[in-house]
Every structure is written in structure tokens, then in C-alpha cells.
Length: 181
Image (cartoon, rainbow, N blue to C red; front, side, top):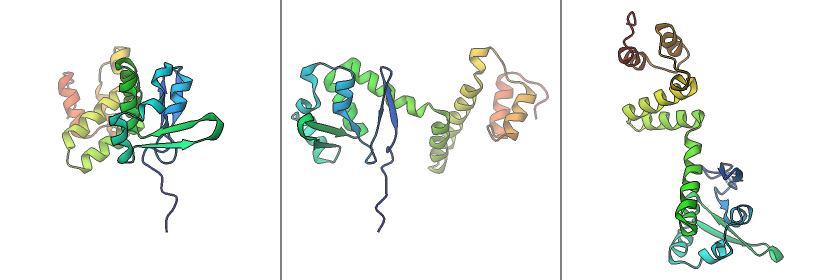
């Protein structure tokens, strides 16, 4: 029997207001730690939120778990879905911050490329190629440096596996490059 199976979000880190919060092996974040560390209002404690209808529904579906840690009180653990729901209960502004923290994970080039590969395996080739191109362009920082594509740069990107021939041809046509075929 396999017992070391970790959740897909296990160990993921989100950064909120410069503070890092790491998911446990079950893919849950400690809402009590987030509340305490970020000094959220006393009336917005996770323990008060878990009494809401939305939280009870999330708890029934395994998205929320509470641990009793003795004198320190209870700790509320939550999946990504429940963490976002809790953030929305705290305030619209906090919900945006937490949402952006989760989205930032997807903007990491290595994560974006994994997502693009998964999209391609599901038959979403066009969307996958767009995501790969965006990731490549972001890594190279073309826009911020004012650089334009060159034939040599596109050939190098193909050789390194960062672009396909078709992607490079599209970029060459877009940038009006002569001699790329």
C-alpha cells in the first residue's frame, strides 16, 4: 500500500504582502497562520469564518480541516479553493491579493511550461503554443529591453527547444524578418 502520496499543491508557496505561506502535504494552507501573520482584523479569524454556510459546505467536501493545538487554540487548514473563499470573506481587496498570489505560481516559467505541455496533451495545441511563446518572450524580456526578434535568435530558440519551427515562422512574419524560411 502506498502511503506517501502528496497532494498536487503540497509544498506550494504563496506570497501575500511579502510573507511566504507554504501548503502542507495535504495541499492545505494554515488560515490561522495567514490571519495572525498578516494581522487581519480580529473579527475575521478563520474560526469565525468556519461557522458560515459557505465554509460548512467547503468543510463537507474536504476543503477545510481544523486542528486543535491546545493552548494556542484551533488551527484552520484550507485547500486553495477554501483559502480563496476565506479571503473573499475577509474583504474584496484581500481576495484580490490572495488570488494574485496563487496566479503568481502559474507565471513561473517552469510551471507555465508544464501547464502548456498538459494543455497540449489534452488537445489544446493552440493555447499551449501561445502559453509557451509568452513564457519564452517573458524569459527573454524582449519587450522591456526593446529588442526585436532576429533570424539568428529565432534559430537559436528552435535549437534550444524553446520554439517550434512554426512558432518561429509566425514571429518572423510578425516582425517582418527576411531570410527566415
